[in-house]
Image 1 (cartoon, helix red, strand yellow):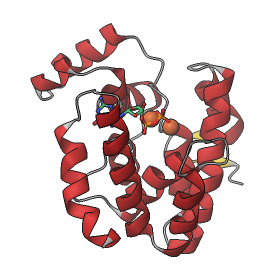
Image 2: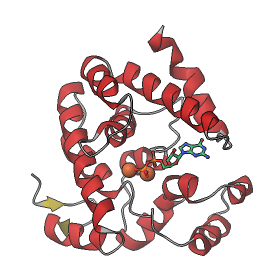
Image 3: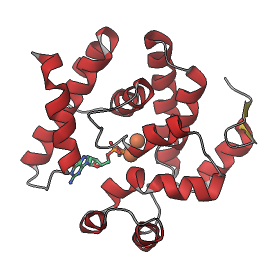
Image 4: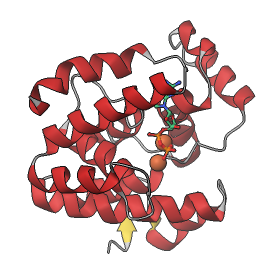
Length: 196
Ligand code: GDP
Ligand code: FE
Ligand code: FE
């Protein structure tokens, strides 16, 4: 385990305290599960284990941030105004990175990119972003139909795991009759070839 994270100039202990202060006990457990899964995937697929650890620990940092804060950040950083038509599910990654930068002075572009796209993916995801996207889905605390299959696929191919997760996510969202964020569909279109 890493004792110090120079990207945020904090010891692990202080960083975990900061993160814990932002969220429920349950969500904190989730981020530790994501970290464990992300480290395993990073080792397997030749990605920086340190960056995987930090990206995982911070990925849901803004998940319990109030809507009003996100709306202000969208204005402050001149982000796509269409974001205002969405909600916390889309904001906590895409807009959450601005809160993380403000609160923790994190500047590492690779880690910020991975956190930015962790919910909806992107056709141009880095390997680190893929590791986080998949780890979030398969971490040990997840329990939903298909998670065992997703874990098995993640053991074979990172791209196939991204494809499988995105396919299942879009299927699930359609079943729920909720809007699908266009970037989720772009991710699907870019990765579905790996499932053929
Ligand atoms: P979590 O933060 O660990 O719960 O996981 P995620 O960040 O991956 O997803 C957060 C929530 O956003 C989940 O409930 C997803 O089902 C939902 N979500 C992901 N993509 C979309 C989308 O395109 N549209 C909508 N409406 N919800 C989405
Ligand atoms: Fe999330
Ligand atoms: Fe998460």
